[in-house]
Amino acid sequence: MSIITVDHLVKDYKIIRKEEGLKGALKSLVHKKKESLRAVDHVSFSIDRGEIVAYIGPNGAGKSTTVKMMSGILTPTAGEIRINGLSPQKNRKEVVQNLGVVFGQRSQLQWDLRLGETFELLKRIYRIDDRTYKGNLDIMDDILEIGQIIDQPVRQLSLGQRMRGDLAAAMLHSPEVLFLDEPTIGLDVNAKYAIRKFIKEINQTRKTTIILTTHDLGDIQELCSRLMIINKGKLIEDGSLVELIDRIAPYRQLIVDFYAEQAPICHPSAQFISGEGARQVLRFQKTDITAAKLIEDISKQAKIKDFSLEEAKIDDIIKVAYDQ
Ligand SMILES: Nc1ncnc2c1ncn2[C@@H]1O[C@H](COP(=O)(O)OP(=O)(O)OP(=O)(O)O)[C@@H](O)[C@H]1O
Image (cartoon, rainbow, N blue to C red; front, top):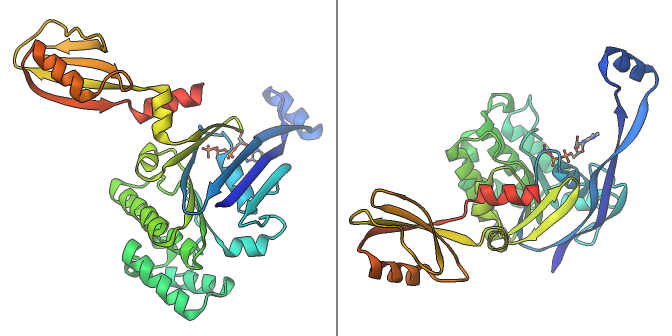
């Protein structure tokens, strides 16, 4: 059952077009030429309860603008958004009560307060009862080790600690929907691991529906069963990563080490890519032959010492998807 529906969503920004050069810039100050920029262009999708969806696209594609409209921060130029049947614009209070939002680039925490004091403030804003608050803090401590940093002023937190604080803050009121805008930006591998673990756990244990915008393709591979790609304001892909791989690059590579140097292997379902010493790289379509059958066939031609399989690289696939 859908928890989020977005129907022909459009956002136009009014921008002032500057003329070139100093003279032009000065002229633009007096005669402001207003133009309209379409950041989101008739985007439609629906998301089921408990899904984790990656919402990705190149810089300036319209991701943050969509998330801001879904969280009620921006008003759409046209189109409709429904979260649990309610409009984030018309029913802001009710929607926000059921929504957690984290912007990786900008903290929602109070800079001058201790982390724990910020949580207390949120408890009052969202009217969270004592039991829920305590229970959620305990869970966040288990997953994000919040206890270690709860007494520290927010301004003293490292980027990774701050992100843990932001995520905990977003979950204190037990929202059913969570929007995460680049939650792993700038984080080291350990911090990224912690954040991904958190996302997985709250999704599994609470069935929280999560929309994740990210440029980190590792986030997608680890977390998201569904991928939506936006480019120049338009939704250009919506499906699983596996489907996208199968469509854009439905091949795999077999790297075979023989006991001795060989002439390039000939096989009707595989293409010889390269050879160096006793190693050869072959490419084959998943739909043509299984890896097991190919290895069996090759082993009839020459003795195999070792082999490994390589899937098409996700970076390459996403690049093709962005460029199409
Ligand atoms: N407040 C604004 N006023 C005018 N134009 C804006 C405003 N905010 C965003 N834009 C423009 O709208 C387009 C979409 O921006 P948006 O921030 O939604 O992209 P994004 O996909 O989140 O990009 P990034 O990955 O770089 O964060 C861009 O061309 C951007 O310059």
